[in-house]
Length: 333
Ligand code: GLA
Image (tube, rainbow, N blue to C red; front, side):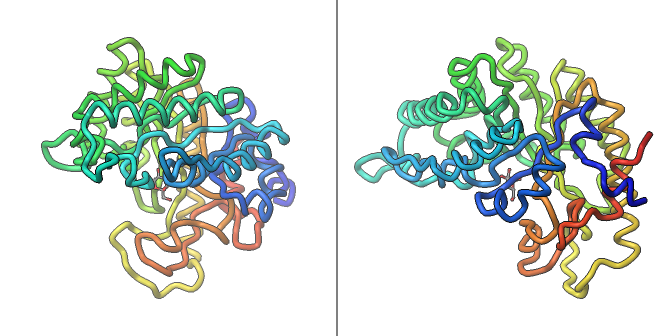
């Protein structure tokens, strides 16, 4: 068992796909040993998002993102760019003109283009793929699109435009549409339709990012496989971009657990084992698996969906030791 727990995650998966982690500037210091041993791809958890990197029209703050990119380069890791166009963590100035009114379509498109161009030019050498558009699709109901400011001001082709701009700036970069709940039959069909349009109109898209904010109960392995089959039938690649396996069902608001129970630990191991088996089986289609965090001492799920509730969604525990789930992922020969 010790031998198994000493393995390196990314070396074990070297013949399959890169293993990534989302990080903040602090994490590359506090978790550097784990990162260097187990991960060969990084994503900025927040510091490439417009609100942080482009807080005012003429103001860019690259330092934190640069530090993460430099750490990745120094350690021979890939970098996934996240994210260029999203309805959250986008500064208000983007949608307001100099007179304080809401911008029109042309100005917003010009700003989108400028943002995408500066970002992709700057990181051209290091960032090999980008989440060009994040979460543009409505989860339920007849509407295909989320009623975001991007959508309301530009119209449905804001997605196409973002991909067009991105393709022009860096024709080598792999361009992804990224979303959560993308195994839901209803939402996956909508994502499929939009991806098909982007594919048919000049091969603007290379892949779908399935975020992978899942839990120890769902989605089912069959749903995951069906979804990968659906997207890849378009000839697109898949990346799992934000993987974490919560100990709680999404609508479970319990706060009674100070530690995970044995049952939770076992179910999590079984889930991780099962989904990585699927990922390996789809190695020709899956070109990256990124965790949304490194170890259980730092995870956004401690505040979502229930504020202040501890969760344990990753492969390393709060002491940075590999969990049973880790053994399930690396021990497959
Ligand atoms: C979404 C976004 C990520 C991150 C998570 C929550 O999945 O794509 O950037 O903000 O929510 O941490």
